[in-house]
Image (tube, rainbow, N blue to C red):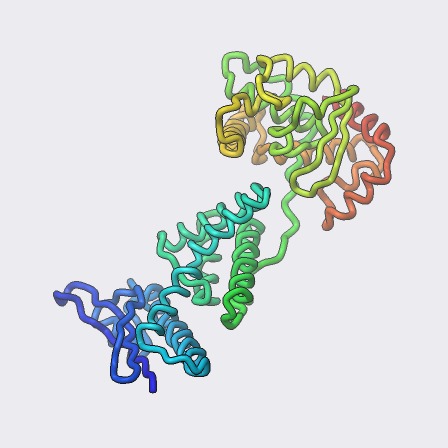
Amino acid sequence: MTSIKVKFRPGCRAEHPGSIVYMISHLGRSRTVSSGYRLYACEWNDTASAGRSPNQREQYVTEAKESVHHDLEHLRRIIDRLTHSSVPFSADDVAAEFMRFSRLYSLFTYMDRQISTLRGRGKPRTAEIYRTTLNSFRRFRNDNDVRIDCLTPDMLSRYETSMRLNGITCNTSSFYMRVLRAVYNRAAEEAGFDNRHPFRHVYTGIDKTVKRALPIQTISRIRALSLARHPKLDFARDMFMMSFFLRGMSFVDMAFLRKSDLDGGRVTYRRRKTGQQLTVGWTREMQAIVDKYPCNPTQYLLPIITRKDIDERQVYRNISSSINSNLKKLAALVDSSQRLTMYCARHSWASAARAKGVPLSIISEGMGHNSETTTRIYLASLDTSAIDSANSLIIDSV
């Protein structure tokens, strides 16, 4: 007969928190395992009786109570499995299996493994997405890890609320939730714990984004700014205009655009986001920006990654952040109330194309599509010269 008891060990002093432990007993021998939670005596008494907790620690005590419940269920599953295996076991075996599972399936540790696996498979972008999501959740948790099977609807709702209060957009919040849900589902399938669907009360959809396009007049004012005395603003402006000239090419695609991608007066590249291959006619406006900067000693075409002995992804992220910061200053210089980022160039190109009467089939509604698949179908069926003509028309109007 195997039994499990939850015990509270008071702190060495009344003002110190005590610890919650599990006492596993089997065949007259016992083993104690820590829950990892520390409560004050008054909190433990509340948790054990009325189920209430002091206001200042309400979330922590609630989480401790939920975790104890999950831990007991998990310990019982371990005992059931060992009992039905017909192999003799001890309280130490139960404790060892419990701690092994806790190590392997703590959220932070598990996601770190997933990130390493993704990098090993040549998927650095997805690895970065996982890392960004993990960093966000770690901040919410104040760096306190949690076992994946202990994620609860209440915890995730609090995380969602925290993101909103910190100015995170609905789509970004939803994106992080979808990543965490994928991690949870993978771990549940891999480890065999019950999928309790803890994400059922948080938003995981995609809202239609607020239009980010700038009027063509604003684009013209940005292009005309005299910034020779402000090299950082000048560089940010040049990269924004280059993106606009390149039909709203994303900054990550610009950063890793190779010299060999420019051939015969055309740039051919594959979008990192979708894998879709695009080709853009190279214009004098694009060449003027390239000529403005020293020859890049690396394989890359644009003056973004300019050294060989560095972490290219980190450089890209740092420069992207710097450019977007400086674009905010540029917006103020042209008296634009809109939030200016590199991504605005993509919206702005599509908007300018529509304003110039370019057929909808050519611009494929720019950023207005609900499905990127539709955009790919439109662009794939067109003669690239029609798109180049449209692009020249837009560039000439700036």
